[in-house]
Image (cartoon, rainbow, N blue to C red):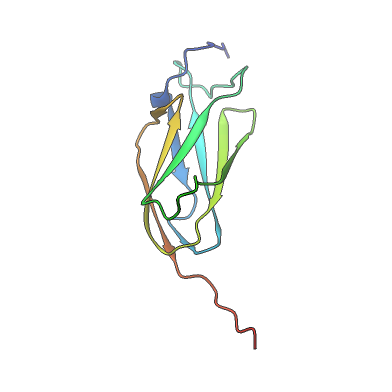
Length: 116
C-alpha cells in the first residue's frame, strides 16, 4: 500500500461507537477506521492528532480520553462518563470532524452501593 503523508483528510475516517448504551462509570469506546484514497487502510507514518468533544458538557474539566493506534489504520478511543443522559460525541482529526459526525450514545444510571 502506498503511504501519502498529508493526504489523509478527516472525511477519510469513520467511527463505530461500540456500545450505544452504557452504564454511568462504565468505559465507552469507539473504533476509528481511516482509509487512503484507494480505500485501503491508512497506516500513518506520523502520530495522527485526534480529539474528542462530548455534548452536553457535564463538567468544567475537559473530557479525559485516550486513543490507541493499532498501527493498521484503526484507532480505539476510550473514555468514561459518570452522569446518565443522552450524549453526542464529536471526533475530530486535525481539528475537523471525521465522517458521519456526530455520534450518539446514552448513559444509564450505574450500580449503586450500600456501604452500611
